[in-house]
Length: 144
Image (cartoon, rainbow, N blue to C red; front, side):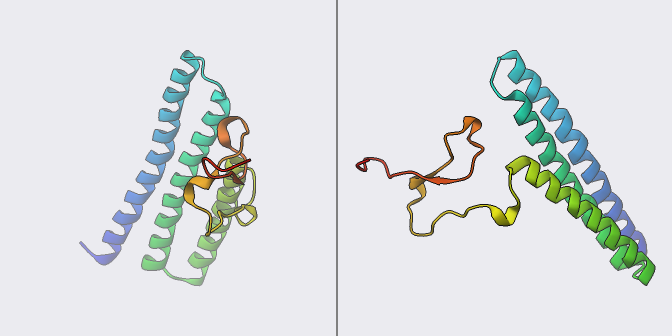
């Protein structure tokens, strides 16, 4: 087996893994959401969208990795690198868009936890489902 054949096989394997991550994630999400609907849990649709988005993000990452491996290792011509750049730009835009949809803000706009606060003093907002930005809460037993 030649080097190009090995790299092509790795690329195909990552393609299959990416497609399986998307299809399997969506299938699992449908089943889990049906169970949540059956149990009449709240916010089923929001959780469904978030879980599908996560499956798509994982699949996109694997598909981009496959494209990079094949392009760089097999045929690193200017044309193939330019095509790869376009594919990566489109998939990166999709990833950022899905990330914003899932989390409600751009990654660089999220607040970070304070390094000096104890871990239990940090928590999710009181919004339904805990999807809001991180907010400070007093440590247990502290005077309000």
